[in-house]
Length: 531
Ligand code: NOJ
Image (cartoon, rainbow, N blue to C red; front, side):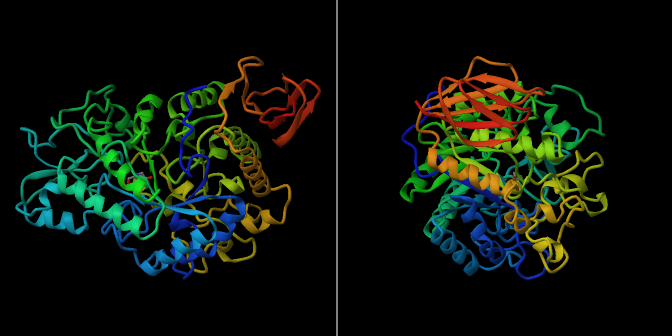
């Protein structure tokens, strides 16, 4: 179904892996993951079957938002390493036949970026117009009712000039003014710089909100919320008619697309919009190559919800929405699907279900281990969303706890020092890479087998036909000779088969016999139709 794109590039059926650098592997004992640590663990990714390593920001940063507040777009923060380490990373990734994606953060900079420092110090500075400044409302309040994703108004007053700067995230993350051609030119230089240095593409942060409506009008309020509302509730209480997904945004990416093509590089957007149709526009020909579609990583274990996100992805993604199950911002799939062994089993089954559909498949560090969200003591909270709000929504610390590598080493092998976020008590020796490597029944072995099967079957080249018949709690599709069936219900189901099949991968108890497959709850079967 859907009109899948067939003339895609090297990324079209790749396996990506998100490295949240700060929490991946610490080489120098300062408790913070770094580039040398990542290099030392690349063989784990190569063994797993990863094609694309996406590394989160390593740029110099005051770390108000852990690196998504960039103070210098072409440097490396000393906590993460040096520019030589970055060059070594590019080479080490390429030596293993993988490609490197880096994060590009174009919606905002750090308030410590030299552009903003100059803009704040001197309203006559050429950099003043790199940012968005407005006079306050007649009552002395902010210029409009826009909210920050992270809580509070999207505006902060610069007392010296009497104007307010716009920030859809923290006040320390002032939004850039994409109506200014000099900002566009500056980012084209940044992109060119990194492509020349050998990176293979960019994950584009907040790709849906660079351009703001020139009227700067209030957003329509959907529900009135009180001062106790969480940041997420307050942000969701308005229709984002003027601050998100504005006309003109795609023109920025059309220019970048031309640059990327000159280097055979890929552009992957963080297009955080709920409508698949709206996200689909970002991956039209000549715009971005790929996008994440976030409703996939917000699903609960409900057949209707899963069916909906799969259908929307096939219809509007056309092979250009990257499948994603967990991230450094969202609850991990095993936790969303109920936690414990059951949540883990379901997460692996849904991963396998999506693995043979068109589009790249991204794992987040720990997905290959079946990691659930870490338990973080509120006293150790670090995420600004948790620290700066009285009603914090939980924050993102639980999905950012350090990666567990070895059962016997201090801090499960993440660091010899004190980890910046404590190792959670609910991640144990059995969750580590080394322990799972020794256990043929582990999630790690299953994911490696799954990715090998996927590579052999090459998804995305045949049209996908969703199975319409069978019990409502069963999701299934056929693509060429590959037939995949998932039982998202609470009872064992029997699914009729079109003919003889061989079982290529399964999770949970599956019995494939003549003319039918029997699947226990939460099980998946990947089959090859043999006639
Ligand atoms: C999305 C990033 O993934 C998130 O971690 C960050 O806080 C925001 N964008 C702001 O840059």
